[in-house]
Image 1 (cartoon, rainbow, N blue to C red):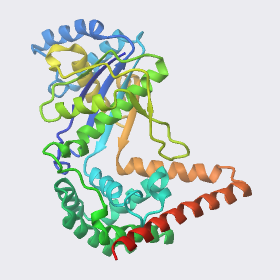
Image 2 (tube, helix red, strand yellow; image 1 turned 90 degrees about the vertical axis):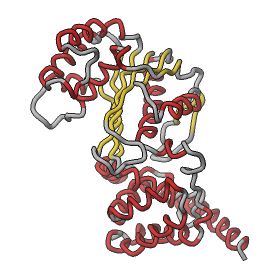
Image 3 (cartoon, rainbow, N blue to C red; image 1 turned 60 degrees about the vertical axis):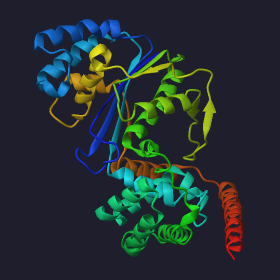
Image 4 (cartoon, rainbow, N blue to C red; image 1 turned 90 degrees about the horizontal axis):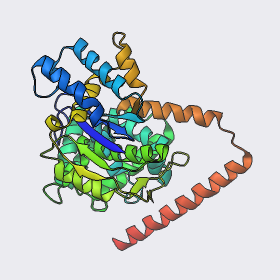
Length: 373
């Protein structure tokens, strides 16, 4: 298979700058579609008098026309368009939860509240309300600097606002315990964003999106029984080395499927991610095709009727990080749990498991307290 990726929306460490959304698009295809799209791209470059296609420099109706021709050219190929959409300011909230409520470091947090998808997104939604805009910015700046005192200041402020938003008694209890432990034992919380000059890059929307693309590639391989040959990403200066590093690290590993919402780790695969390169889109028509599709896709499905956009959406595999997606996950789990057959035996086994997990957590907490005496 072949992978062609491009991005839209300025980001890096400045997640609070406009535009609010960061997008990454990628064409994943079993066969190389470069020979199929090159004549089309060349035709429109000549017609428009440009040396490469940039959708934001082309009239909307023309973008749709170009996209229609591209879709027609590759309709017989097995392919999909992977689309990652990240609400950049929300990264601060998710990083706050991931840092402060990490069960393996914060012994005030029950394991399920960190590892289970439903509880984790419940905490993200809670703290997206609890943290003020000022606190979100303060946390992000402190996080990138590995500034534990700055993070403690955000935790202190969060505790003040927490009771206003945590209406559920158990949610308030878990959130309070987690904040209390982190504040009193901040040295137990691992901070790595400033370990080297480039460490911060792995926490940016750019690299979060790239990691989602890598997992999409593994999924595509599994669904189509294929293996990567070439992996192209549009030319990068700031994040090129980090992309190469991540591409190498996850070349032979994919995330295992979640079991009932629980994280299950990594699974080795018998292939790598192909040869990775960062060419200019000027040199590859397929990268320019990604730009066209990405522009069309981000116009959304709720605008004016557009059959070309609707056709493209038939091929889109979406990945979102946003408050809206957290709400969707939260609601879908509530519905799933309500409709789940839960026997008396299941209840007994669940209580037994929870009791054992809490016992382990309490024992670790006692050892930590004793070590500080």
